[in-house]
Image (tube, rainbow over all chains, first blue to last red; front, side, top):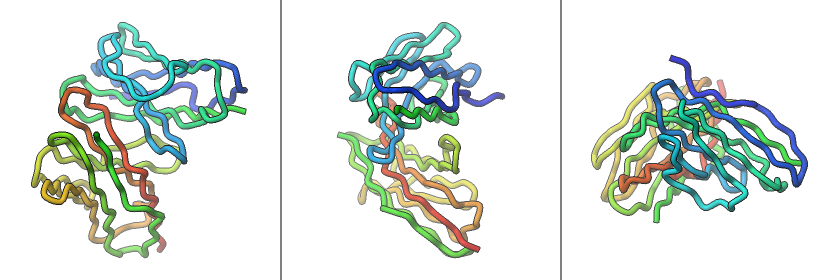
Length: 113
Length: 113
């Protein structure tokens, strides 16, 4: 079974631009979560989508948004990029029930210049 | 609220040495506890988990026991190998429905031959 895939793996943008990251979950998984990893803040939860609906949201500004499609693939968007948005963005999928193991993708490394 | 406090690194050990990485948590209720490992350039992999008090998670020679009385979930391995060099994250997931993961800051382990 293929794992979680994320595209692109690396991205360089400039301040003020916007960016869209993509995540394809493991087949059969309906829940997709996004996390931001930075050296200063560590791993922080962004949001979770389940069956095309945002089910849970972390403490991030509205510039961070996401969506999920009917095939469970998910995208996250960051608008008006800031230098502090430079991070590794990780996507995780799971079947969707309580306490399921989350399977992580390799991440997208975003650099904002 | 939910939080995880993890032993600061980095940790450097010789091959075959004993490893302990301390992890304590604060949570509402009785969370599930996890150890994840991140190898260079990769996403997170679940190493082991425990879902209730006194459960012991184990995998690849690593062990951790869910201690409710001390709110701890320390990671141990009796004999580390060079291939264990990675960053280790302790995490919790509450069972109130949100299910997102709260991570510790991570501990970088380097094992030298």
